[in-house]
Image (cartoon, rainbow over all chains, first blue to last red; front, side, top):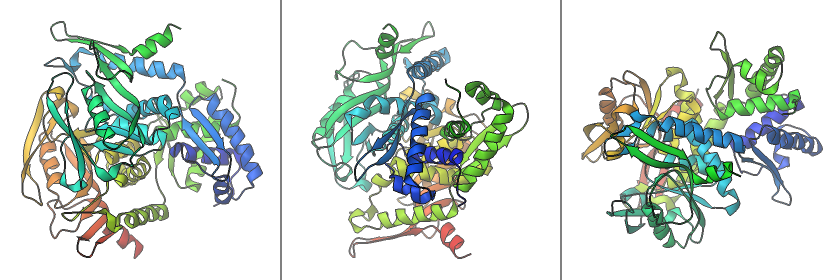
Length: 276
Length: 276
């Protein structure tokens, strides 16, 4: 490779770091890759730190010590976050999303790579300091958001199945009661997919009464794992939830089939933030 | 925002482009964002083009005309691709992955954000020129790979369900026969999720006799959609497949429970490439 100038090298290093969020790269790695002195690289890092702060896309962190180096932590500015959430609410308000039975069609949103990448960064930013070892989700619709959250945190994803398939080896299963329809469902997870006594966050697309979150809690307890956060794209308005602490991006107040009206807003978290 | 120097601006623009693969940004957008003349930006673009070529992570393309601008197309160098695939085969060969019944445990691989991002870039690179409108997959295990492929191509993901859920509105369902176990299964897709007469690629984690791929073909035919590519992470060795053209990353030759041996190799595509 031709020796790069600083204007190229800074861009190249930032691209590598940002493609691999939360992964630590030693200065030695870049020093060898770009054939340049560590002291020069330290200056590059200073430029990068200032830059990502300036364009508000996260932070570049230096880790000292033997296993040290530099890593990129994705983030989003408060004003961009609220603008993004408001934009989603506007899209979801459209009456042609009403599905008979009082449901709302969201697949185009929760399967859009562009949108789920941003949701992933928001959830990661929210739960980063709780130091989760895994992102857990349950099949099917929450998977795209959950894998993007896992990507932003640089940790593995675990997908809990609602039937036990032969191809995953021995599994642990539990029965749980859905919070809204009071039906009994089964969830199962392959034994070898989790290290016992780990920390996890649970990510999903939708929360009604929180029965699924509670089921996940029960299932993960079988692995002695601790829940350090719950994040959902949309929570629907319900008097009581089976879980107390969770972070929702949006709150669905009502779907009125007769009036052809959907009321959906940024969640309490954002409305409280806006009033302060 | 403080006015950026070129060494910062090139990094900032490349970060934005590479976070939004295949999305066209006008020079006017960057000109306004960074308060800089278009002529200066044109020079930045020249630097970026040379740089991404140098570090072999894709291409920066300029699109002329009224809707023109600049976009980033992710890619991977041939030597990095084969090294990545060989690394995966090495991981998957480990005998402790054998699951009773002759299956192989892959969840840690196909749910790893780092690995599925790279697979997504490989599939995107492979099918980019066929100009698909959608990436299609079927629940559950292929979803992480499929969303990353959709992200790299900058197009939406469609998830076909194996049961029809009430929350997706009216659906089109088909019955199909699995290629290996000859069982009848159902697949369904919400009517509003696809524009008729679109092109799609089908992405999945595993292909045995190709029954699922053929089922998807039948289902998408109901929407007058055309399959322009099939990509799977692993194909298992079977004399005959129900589909003729597909691209696999790896080929699973055998899982021998008695000998505790898994034989898995880079697919024909790579082995042929290596011999030329």
